Length: 613
Ligand code: M6R
Picture 1 (cartoon, rainbow, N blue to C red):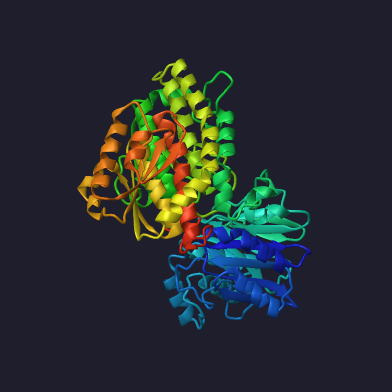
Picture 2 (cartoon, protein in one colour):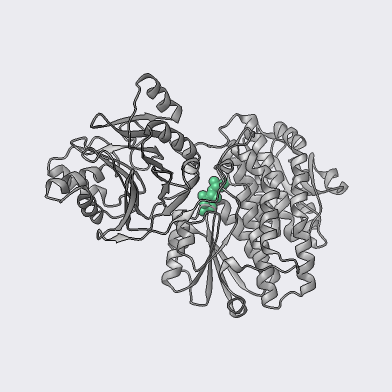
């Protein structure tokens, strides 16, 4: 989704804006632009495509100035083109705006402005904003701030905004409603950005703007106001992310770096919540034992990879407690008529904490007076702020668009949450809790082992990547793993892939199986009947000459005798095997994408943080 960065201070804004936009590239975009103050005028540069095009433009047509605003655009209203790229200007070219979000009543505002003589140069919803401000100034607003507030009160929809006004050459205006925007505080310089990693190298503290707030940034300070123009006291948060966390650290891509970070992330999460007494405590989550004791029903909502994590969470909670647990996709949940009662715990699962459909569902649950717990990776995000309780996944910034470490951290969070709830409700014994914690403690090393097998996985990916399609099969706890493996593959390699519950194969997808079809079968060994059933499903594939790639427990000769290729994983409890198995699938997708030559960190059409419906 669109990315915003802005700078006010004594340095030339242009390189800072370009650097910030590069760090926002992972959000997904199709064009980019900047505007800076220079020689008492506003100057803009825009380009379609990657930031390199904007840099080339600046190399041949130099620009210096301050303050400045910059934008990466992910097209919604109007195709990716120079005219639709931000910043957009008013009719007099004295007001520049960059915007993330959608102004829902833009057509009606545009009609009205056009009737009043305004000429529009783009197809975007954003362009109405500078024109509205221009109109309010002409209509007698006292000053720019007043005109901006009047204009914002007339819009419906969502915005994160950065604006420059030619007549105030030392100021950036920012505003937020429904789309993320932060203000960063450096040494006598201030930034706005869509997220912290974009400006991490320059700031020590951050203000997470609230919905309905504007910020006025000058080289000597920041003032925050509400839409009534009243000054509000913002909460300053210290930034505790190390700058290296947002760098590739020698890896060829962020995704590969993040895959390799998983052992450390999971170890940290486990150490934080499992006490020396081998007991899981979740003090930061903010929901206490008494609450879990009387709880009857849990509703989990999420999108994409986070939805697969929630499915795993449902299976695990149902396995360990007698809670009734339901999951849904954010985009579906908000448009059906869910039974939400006061005694339901609503769980939002999200890496970014900004996904529009999950956030809207969370707000729906709040309206119904449900208690809301977010399992989230980004402090200060909208979901975190709208929740009663938060369980942080603490994976650090995830820059690769395809989620990896955030996913396994979500699985670990569910493993910890389910242990905590089960013990509080006396549905497992202390001994059982101890055994499970010991099992979880072995996961980081098991993932290390998988990472050491990367060359073997690469060889398998090289062999199978060129087919048009692939099928991923799993059962029970590994059914979400199959879905996630298929999603990873299609996201980054663009090979069509379907994840399926293995038992469902015979109800349709079996028709696809022939001697060209790779079928990834997750058949890690367990004591129960799921393994045997999975083997039967593999035999069904074998009988139709499908090309089986098995994810199997170390030394499983039976699985090896059926599969064309086998990826061995270390043995663990069945319910925790998805944490290890998915790493094999991440690597499989990664090397398939590499063989197919795609842009792994920034796959086409995708956005990291999906802030529109
Ligand atoms: O930030 P969220 O976890 O709410 O994002 C949800 C999905 O957009 C996200 O998981 C998406 O599916 C990723 N590209 C998966 O790799």
